[in-house]
Length: 509
Image (tube, rainbow, N blue to C red; front, side, top):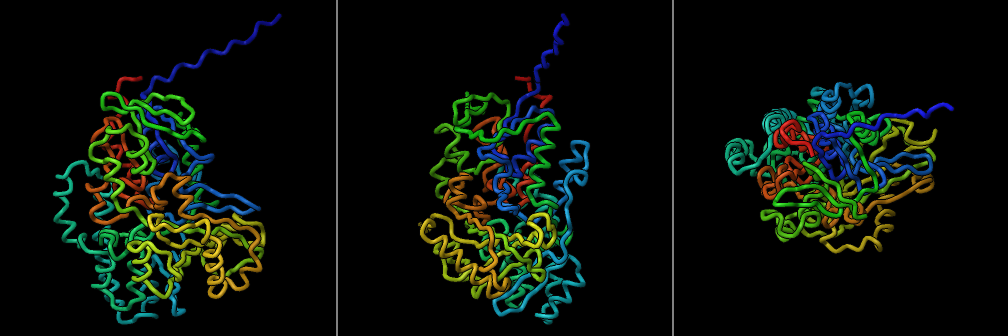
């Protein structure tokens, strides 16, 4: 009789253990970086797929990215693969878009935003010839702000008030205490161009009339590194990072909701899942919303600075209404990204951010990924999503009663402006409201971008990447420094290299 083959027992992995709560881009990037720095990494995701806001919806042969679709600063993704001795382009193909997007103003005029300075000047001259020189001056200012605000400070932790004091002169010189719209208005006069150069804070949940002028850096960031789309959708970046984590010996567990963070003698020592399973850890990194982390995951009294009552008073970002739909025809004249401006700019933003009322009018972002990648829809079909900034749930809107009517108004507007015959050609449809952000993503008031990016909630004033009160607890994602958006959340993970010790400095658990 042949003796059974005996496989050796696996050697216990004695590396220090890092638990990452949440698999948004901030959490996934953190997991990659920690694995490279010697940690055994476990990513715990509440939902049935990774990605958080960047998860994917698939239905009726269509693929829809749930959230971010504009990839800027792609070198931040490249760096993650490089750290692991691999090349991003061998796993995920990023396609440069030109133009970046089309702005369609309410009067019917339009502006294609290009990364080519000469093309952009020509486009501006067509609608606002008197502002071309002012545009060049603004772009020079944007480049200066980007050099300091993003390249020098975007990956630097603001752990003490002295960090803020050191950069205060630069912030003042760069008009950081002013708004983006105020900054833009110093350089150009045409109101359409003021909108075109100031709307970027909406990409990170900010009001152009209150967001710090530091966010004026986005215009140069786009010009320098371009605007890209991942072939197969943004979800390909998510799955690519998951594969990268696993190639480093890490794990990504789905359906693993964290009920609370365990704290012993002021130090995070692990987490407990909703089902009761306890997981020990040497380091805990939370990619959950900061208000959820401090208000729901930590034991009462564990944090003195970020008490739940304080965070409850913080200003949360706007929310979003998103309609995902597919058509049984194509619209070849519609570009990949279109921003449709409504009849009001300042007034609509005031309704969304201050008054928190759902207005009759709206501005929209229309995403047609099949303009670049036809594989996201069946042959002869188009995939879309249209996004409308709306108030968060602090305004008291009952989306269970207004969602369908709001969707129908948007559909009628798209049919009248961009997509003729739309309502006769929609073959698949789904919506996401602020309620989804609250219930599925644990976002207070359904805020789509966590804390609103105003000066008094930025840098040192924002919850820090290293918890001040709980040793061994770290934060990444939209609610911590430097903020929301893909470059922001990837940079928040980059900061961990500065604040989390290398695994070799810790005794293995």
